[in-house]
Length: 147
Image (cartoon, rainbow, N blue to C red; front, side, top):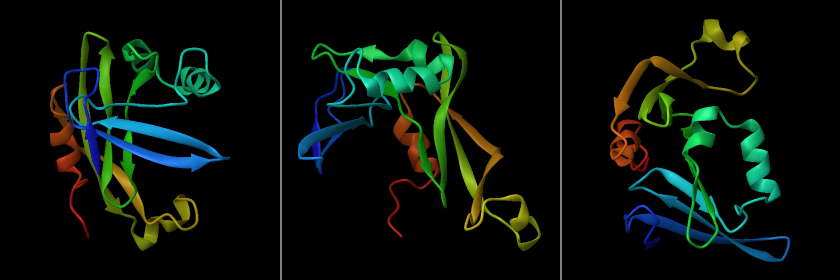
């Protein structure tokens, strides 16, 4: 695991590299802030334009352009069998992280979900976390627990 400095004052940004179509791509997930970017996420790029088209207004309002020209978006983390962490709020001045746990789908409910899906997000289990507590929200859904 390679941790690097991020644009929000955190040195807990996980950097990962992989190759796609002969091109090296790097991604970053900043555990200190909860924001993410990649070498493909630059202003005007197809990746950013697609995100702008499909993201909720709050996510768009919070995007950040780094000094290197990369666009940082708030992350949504989904672990189908554990839970999900996402932004929850009214606007860029009034938001928090929210964690929800996953529940096993009962036999009686199976026909209500796509074939092969075994868990659902239990929105009633939701817990709010302060902006600076993204890692605590991840811990709430057992993100760091290795099974």
